[in-house]
Image (cartoon, rainbow, N blue to C red; front, side, top):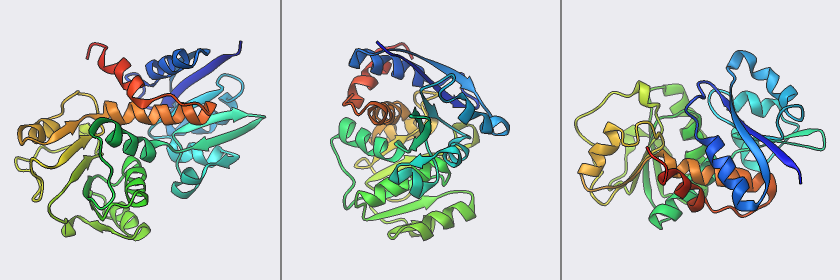
Length: 265
């Protein structure tokens, strides 16, 4: 039986839970393999291609490498090509293939954990970086009625607004807000005392970070009565999409999430 050599690359990378999810996915499918973390910064991003085939068969890619990794690929699946980023690499027949499963994984997590879709919904996305780009794209494709982007970088906010119909900047937040998603790095956040207007106990609040498991932002929304999730759910469903792309399989995101929530925090 083939032994799969998997991993996750980015910087910093020491706290990534992707290897744990990869091992769970391998076990679910009855495959042999291992997964490791490898710290790779932007300066050494060009080395990724040489690692594929020699050291790794497939990789998860995290910040800050998603754009650089996409540029190294021979072929990109449709979403990765449109966004210019990848979170998944696969070496096949001496060619480097890339995919982006972040946006679809996020929507899978909403359906799996809340039983809801986003068609017709009013959504606020906090942040305008790479994760926000994938999530906004997925929200628009799924038929969200309006997506308001609140970010500190005016250029990246404008780029998101210009790229999609129905996406507006934070000055046009539609009310009530049915879903609010925080994509900003926890290390750069400033805690605000009041929630955004339009957010109520009927709002679903998702923080895509998971360290700490309940951020001050998420705790604030939970105290309001919102249904909340941290980033573990998006991570698990995104990695399930990733491995299913690698192997044309059907690993459930809920199964992978259970392997994380059963472990000590």
